[in-house]
Length: 304
Image (cartoon, rainbow, N blue to C red):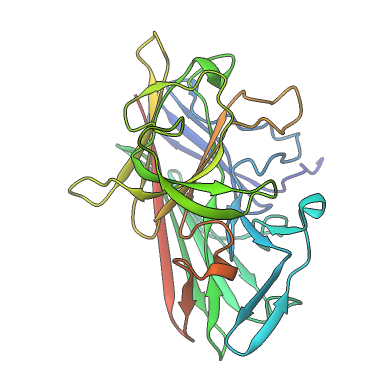
């Protein structure tokens, strides 16, 4: 049998919903409802590009120069965004995640971050994907299996689509009061209110030609504690809600302008994150996992 570039494919089904979770990186390759793609994903014969569907552990987004201090240690991560001199999107994107549990509508996959250059800590991670009557629910749980405290952050990188040729035509709603201004390396230089800026999507409006690779903070949440991003087709009545629950305190929105021309602005990445970019340096919402401590981030998708 020919091996796929993303290893074993875990297919989930419930009613008119289907999803595929992959072995490489433990990521989400596809999600469909009533035959309509909810994700701008990729085929089983393709390699992952643009972080598509990947889990970002033990940090999301960027660490400037890959350099940070934790406790009494000065640490240096490998630079994986070389041109910008950043370490980007963690350490588990390209490793095999083991199958832990599965049934027809649910799968649990797991991997461990072992001590290594720049991250001398041991953190075990499980990702649970479950199809429910309300859509897809994702839970990412981490436990410090080492003997010393460990810095930790988590995110995920799904690209959403509502069937428009380009995201320009889609209607976007982002329930955030503040946006993060960044430099030309994608590193934060400060946060500002969204009011009066091009980055204010608290009321749904077309994306048009706006270029977004933008982190958001101070999310507005409902009585259940969820913040919901909405992407809607401008005319056919279909759309998708991405909700951020426990542990998902921040958000990155990316219109894909730096991707290959065949994928550029075809979907919009809406990335739940536990912390903002460069949190290993700033410490903002960075989780310190003591030995035996756990952290959970939960998010999900509802198509309509």
